[in-house]
Length: 280
Ligand code: AFP
Image 1: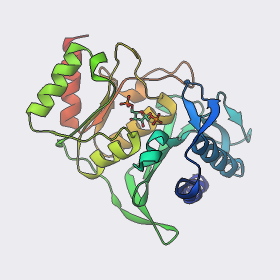
Image 2: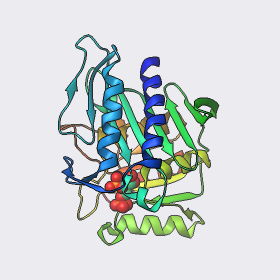
Image 3: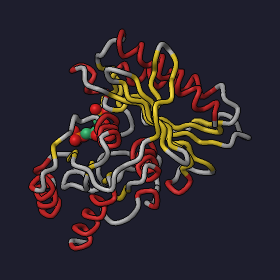
């Protein structure tokens, strides 16, 4: 697994350079979810694929930017699903973006996720690795230095409410309103990586991307976004659910499946479970 983490570090260094100097324009292509790919999405994907191709323990990879699984080494132990540049539509306004990696064994399903990593490209470049615990690293003079472990408080005070409000269910809207009435502060940039990173680093809160009238299964992709962050939040002492049950137990029928998702401190996750149970 160390080789995989090293490759991710190298990809972060190369993608940082790409973000700083590359063309932020659109390409002619769409990914499997129908999003028009930016040139930076495609170039970041190429960087990561090339680095993983040199690692013997990687059996196969699948990218959010590609249709299918790519087989690499038949005797490899790990399968990696990744989103090379999540939130790339925020680059032209110079907000933070990130790369997300889920490392799986046997197959690409939630219960078989064994580690996850994300990289935040903000004013500084930071990397978070979740295995048995959750560790924060920062890029300093070209090297990732360990900073500290991340542990969520039982309850936080930040709320990141995703998706279009006029597509929310009535009970979801009431829950979000009640959370704000309880004094939570709004923190939502539209980039999953910085929004979830903020809640983790500031001790807790709730990020939600619910099932909505226009997207009954949510927007965020299970393998590339939802499961890796579910793993991070659970290992940091918080929770991650689809409204009703643990995200890491949600079934995957296709590599590009999406899921409604809630990530947060335990107190907030219990609150969501209670509201959604009453409306199941
Ligand atoms: P882009 O990659 O198209 O910018 O989408 C970002 C994202 O997948 C994720 O990073 C955000 O949390 C989410 O979409 C925001 O979606 P809404 O704008 O619908 O809240």
